Amino acid sequence: MFSSYPTGSKRGPPISSFFSDPSPATKKIKHVRSLQSEGASFQGQVISVLVGNEEKKFTIHADRLSASSEFFKRLLNSSSKGFLENATNEVRLPEHSPEVFELYAQFLYAGQIYSDPGKTALDKNNNSHALETNLLIDAITLADYLQDDEFHNAAIDALISQAIETNIWPVNSEWIGKALTSGSASLVKLLKDFCVFNSNAAWWTNDKMGDSHPEFWISVAKEMALLLDGAGRPPMKWVPTNCNYHRHKAGVRCVSPALAVIESTSYFDDLQYWVG
Ligand SMILES: [Zn+2]
Image (cartoon, rainbow, N blue to C red):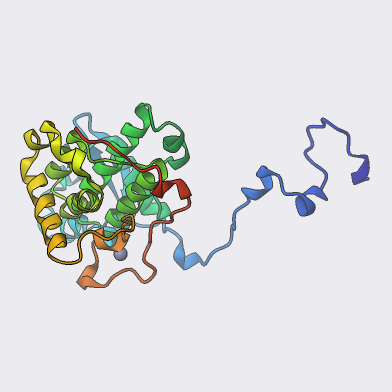
């Protein structure tokens, strides 16, 4: 009866096609079975996190927050619980945006960052790339504020992945300034390393470089001078080792370092820089 399946029917494709010629729809089928111990628990006390000036409310399980964030662990385990206002189990984070905390809440339960890499790669010349970059830098800032190493590492990986995918590194004046004020040493190191290994002579004739964040560019120049003392800058294009920009408890690096996957062969030929 499958062979008589009518064209254009709303009932879907014949069952044979699921095996012989997977359509995009069948490729999206995920594994639905995993160890229960690896899943999120939805039992226990919940905390209301009020984020931003508008105090957007997120309701999160206390054990999720404590397990992932040293900030929340201290807060929720402290005997005084001074930050929990009026015994209503509320925590306020006025300095951070709800959009970024939404990423964090999703990460707590799903273990991944819901970024949109395909979209930003396609739209790298319009505003969505900038918005995504800002969001990921804000995520790193939030991760460091909350002392959440796993979220920090995931956000660093996402930012590196986006930069490689779009061939655009966030090293214009605005983003360097944003990184410097983020308080995230590893984010600044990532951008600095990119500049050490990729800047060319034309960058250093740009007056804007000296006018904005001179301390950053002086530190880049110092590291370039150190390279000259040795064998000079390697001839190969620089590829970041993600783990160098992670936070690791007790210095233990990732078991499987989330090395940036260079899928785009054009990366080496078509690297673009935003400076100025
Ligand atoms: Zn690592």
